[in-house]
Length: 304
Image 1 (tube, one colour):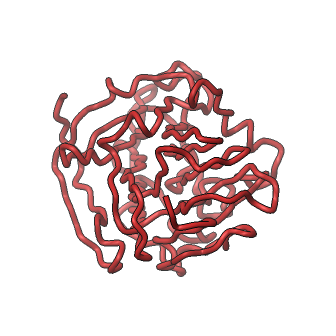
Image 2: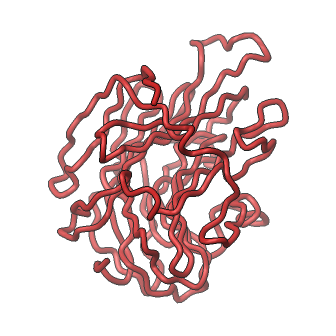
């Protein structure tokens, strides 16, 4: 795999139990995009609905089942003009959580044309997907799409090097997948001349087998992005459980996110209450633990 020089990444790893921050600053990552080619959004042969279509017709996505639990960015906070990088560890269940309708674990990085790195669950199916909102007619995404769409999905059982067992911060052991959801503007105050792309979206996953960050998705595009902090009309949800099941919610294993931080321009937020709020779990789910609001987990049971 090709080595890429990347901007140093700082992320909290293996520190959820104490709430402390451990900095890691890799200077290289492996270009693994060839191992994650564009593909139809399927989980065990079942089509995964388009996120934009699922959420259409509602004033403030994600709806309808709604936000099952999670972190929401506060209006007026976390303004992004040139760079957004969401770092998190996501609890995953490679063998599924047996739900009748879709459940996603997802987040934006606070930009308008963000990526979403999504844990996808339906029945016994469980997968990881990348959904990109930056696809445009003049700047199609890698799968050729000119509008927001899934770029690839891969079943968790086919990605054993990208998750490992860790403490969820509440004393429960679960599989954790670490990722970076990143949007960066090229140039300083002046954008490069058109039609040169001035933004890049990318996703990095922590490879537990090599202990390197793997670049698994990238898209260059040109845009003038809205400031999502002004009125929260875009990019307003941080790490959440999104459910399309009717209330009361079905029984699920523990889901959540650990050690989430957002780098916005040259500032880093641990998603504390000053920058975020928290949506309590939908009934009858339980909040198992929370370190407001960057680490939390919820569900029906802490067992795997």
